Image 1 (tube, rainbow, N blue to C red):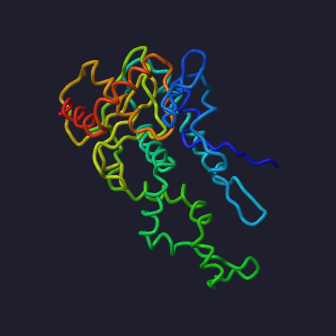
Image 2: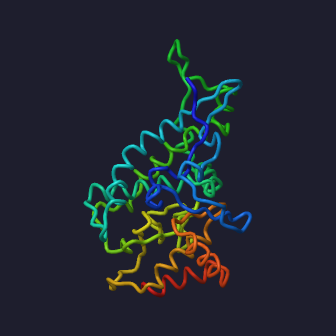
Image 3: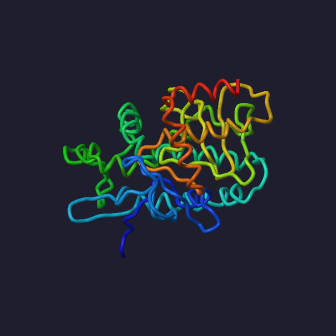
Length: 289
């Protein structure tokens, strides 16, 4: 059976929520500092070849990609609802947990967080020791130099990345069952929010536990999630706030940013050059405090 090669670190069902009526968006290439010519479908960007492929000698497997695809089938149902909503979001408790799970899962999928994942993994001795290798015929645990080297290999660690992310999520005591006061959804009618390849933008430095962090993330071209420890008392935000969110998204990008409106994307590029990213983070925090 032919294995997959193009592995999206931002799922295509999520990317579709930022496209125009033609199912495409404009792409800003941060490496070359320009908008790429034409419009592009979600399948064309935000992926790495063989990112989720495991190699062992001459053998290879896309087991990780298959596992992520099964999860994405569940996540996609929620985002189909979000993307079709033409009003501020009102998400039931059960779906709210799925949304938190998706954001957590997305955060750990991003290439920009690979280094952070490895740091977190190597600090967790319990999880490392959890795995054992057994003899297929006898069922006895095999604990020799070969199995020890196997468990230390990059391929073995990568194979457990998604499982480890789920394990951390389930252990988290900051999981919110109901929509708490520090979660807010913004909505812009007929909007065209910018999406970057690093969409979960932290407003503080709490990188290892984003459920306990303050951050912003676009959920569609019209919807945004604002997670802050501040108890927000305002219900209507000025138009400037939407633009600040898009500038922050743009400045957080590593390779690509997408938007269904190319002229707006160029405007965001020019504004993003005025100040560093911490200035825009501070502006957002000041507007919601």
